[in-house]
Length: 567
Image 1 (tube, helix red, strand yellow):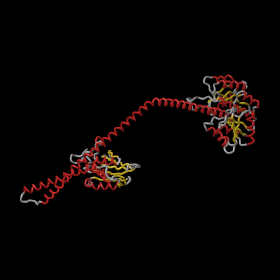
Image 2: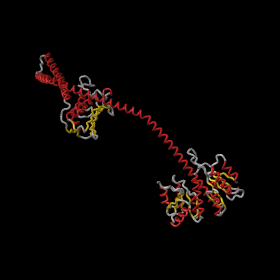
Image 3: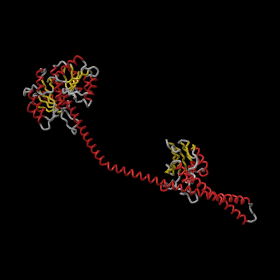
Image 4: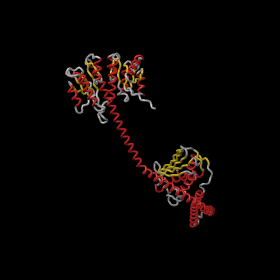
């Protein structure tokens, strides 16, 4: 069975004196209140972080943080800024400081306990009624609205002037009819009504009851505070009657400063609570807007599910189609390379034997022609001998080209042969650069940037062949001179070699063809078209990649990638 909730009003008593705290606690509990007690303002603030009472009763003189500073701390927090606070003190100066710091009411410790109960019940009644909220769309800042009811024109004008100096909007009335008319006027809304309870032209207590009835008839949240103004030393019975008539506070007419401070405190708390309601209303509107937006988002998400599923299916289909196309292209390329490897191996073998025979005899003929002395007497014979020597030299150049072609064909047909080992990349590149120095000459500058791992696990001769083919093509692409940049870079799983030049570059339309066997952009007779095809196949044999892109400064950039796990 769940515990029964305590319906008694909850009070927080902040009192450092153990004796006075016990006395007050027993008295208040005897009056039907639930009382929690804290000995200091600091412990009271900790208590308020966990439990929010209906009203705080605090002594002005506290150890550590004083009562007025404690009040200011409460008013700084949105959680406690509208919490009613009754200040207990023994001096008028303490009352003034307490009310100025934000206390809602003041009772002297020496006052009759019945007066303490009357003030507590008045503050709780005010809290239960609650202020009228302007609504989220209302003004965020406004002046307090006060109705001054007094039969004396002199005092009415004096009090209205004091309250106007406080920044309040003041309406004056001289008796029953004008006061009730002001309250019933269309659009009338007051935060506080001061009533002279001793007015000679009307019954003050009866008017207070009539105003209280008007307040009770107003819609919930539209209440205002009633301050009764009595003589210089009102009797206890008169004060009790005033509270019974509906007054929220009773102040001596002789002490105008205290009256102004009491009105200021009541109006301030009403405005604070009104501001709290306005903030709560704004938060409520935002919550509703968020809920509406959330519902719309969920509906939109539900509507988009089908489109999203279709998009994913289309994307998956496109990925599968691309993978199928790539696999098909690789199979076709592999079949072409395998067939071509067999073809070129046969061609190279068939050509190599007669080529060796011809080269041997060509060398013999060239050597013998060189041994024949010049025939000075016979000019025709001399011309014929010179022509023969020239033709034999040209024959040697042609046969050498055929021999180089056969060598490349044989290399092309044996790309997967050879054992792999650790190759020092910078040394291998320097060796290749030395071999093609005749192509580079002084017209081409070579820039080196070896930032990657120095050693790569690969086939040494084939790696040299790849780098040589790319560097040779770069040199051929810059007959007027330029710059070749060779750099290395390593990641966790790949070693990269970049070779870029400042030549004319390779058009986009030709980049997919340059790795095909016998494809060349050089003039007829200047290349076999096997260099890049060999290089591509070498890299493929290492499970690597060979790509071409545009160099940053123009020209072509070849990137060789060798995966470490494949090494």
